[in-house]
Image (cartoon, rainbow, N blue to C red; front, side, top):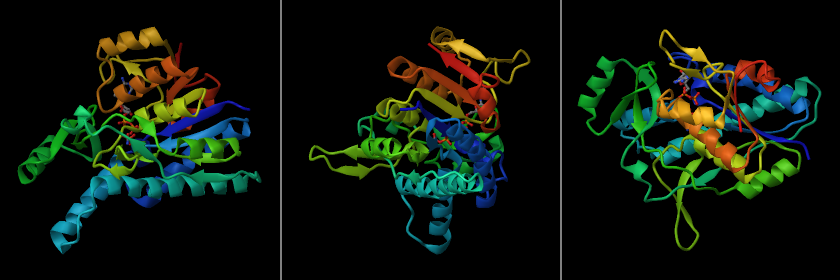
Length: 316
Ligand SMILES: Nc1ncnc2c1ncn2[C@@H]1O[C@H](COP(=O)(O)OP(=O)(O)O)[C@@H](O)[C@H]1O
Ligand SMILES: NC(=O)OP(=O)(O)O
């Protein structure tokens, strides 16, 4: 059996910048990534695709709030907003993959799996929202919104502006992992764990219930990679390489780092929470548990990164 590669597409890399948030723009961004993913399939890898939903779940939540405020419609719970993004973005990726295979004359089955991810109801992250969602705002806009909605929390997100934050518990188990593995074994290109998965808690009688949260897709992807025995984890995001001293005059791009070097950079606070830190923590967890190789890069560098010509490579 060929190597399983899991590719996580960042939610922000599909929106690119504030203003390019229409479905048309996101669909075009998806098509760009998919070309590179199909290249990898053609090279013989078994590819599983996951994706983020930070911007998109925030847009959906805000649409629901506005519809409630203006038209009195019932608000959509955050967990359902997340499930909606899994379907919406999964549809874009699935169709783009099918179309790209058709253009190249390749027969390949593609399926998106609605994926629930178990979290603990006792997770302390429920009381401390950290996951940035939706649009970026100026400090002035964020302060104005905070006055109007005192229950909202905001954080400054990696020098890009202020964003609302929601609870983000750690994933414990991918509920549909066996279905995903069966599809991979059956030769499907699988899209799964979108938006970090739909957050659910498990009761003693083995039933599940959704909870209002957005799981970090990097942590969910790392867990899925472990559970399906993937060899390579690729995280695509808005930058071609991970940097130390990011955004400072002495910023330095990293092409390769070992697990130990990576841990040292974490201790030196080179990676902010809510953006680069989860990617790094998820990568370390994957390498320590089951994986052989991690690549962090932007979607357009995927092919070069597979040949070690681009991206940041984290090795054991
Ligand atoms: N040390 C760093 N090296 C590279 N990028 C960084 C670093 N610290 C913060 N960033 C920022 O974090 C972004 C990735 O986080 P984010 O946009 O939240 O991820 P996603 O693509 O999964 O939505 C990068 O595009 C970059 O703007
Ligand atoms: N759910 C999630 O982590 O989304 P982003 O990758 O878009 O932040």
